[in-house]
Length: 223
Ligand code: GRF
Picture (cartoon, rainbow, N blue to C red):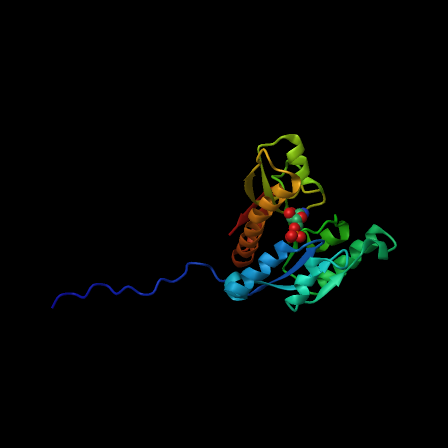
């Protein structure tokens, strides 16, 4: 009798599965499309396969679409406004307390337009991820898209990075490139950047959560 050919089993996805589903707190200030991209991906593949779930969404202002998206998803939300606190330091500590109450593994700044302070970084440094709409270290700050356009750069993009005590200076995790077109204005360019940015953020946060990582100086090594 001839030997039967080796049986082909079902193809098993090589995606590593996190030992534990990681807890994400996402901070927003605006429309929250990056938050939505995370929520959609987690809903599509499931928290176990993605490696993380969003446990709460925080903001520095009320009445924003980012918070409405969180509420529609049934997530707890919190708002800490600078002007409700005696000083910037008090606000920073209040924000850190609010985030900490949800025991996050990672905190994601997804269009959160505030610079956090010492207390927040002491508690969440090394696990606080930001997404910026330019190719850092070029064009840091609040107007990364406008500044790249005004400079006459031919390419720009987005950077997902860990937050340190500078403005958009922390270790870079991943970047995506977007060409600048002659006819671009700030809003058209920002929309194209955000398409790349949402995919990059979803991909990077999932990899950090599933695989683990270490930060060696300026290098981020995802295991
Ligand atoms: C993103 O481009 C982010 O990098 C920038 O603001 C935008 C936020 O977009 N800081 P959204 O609120 O996630 O739609």
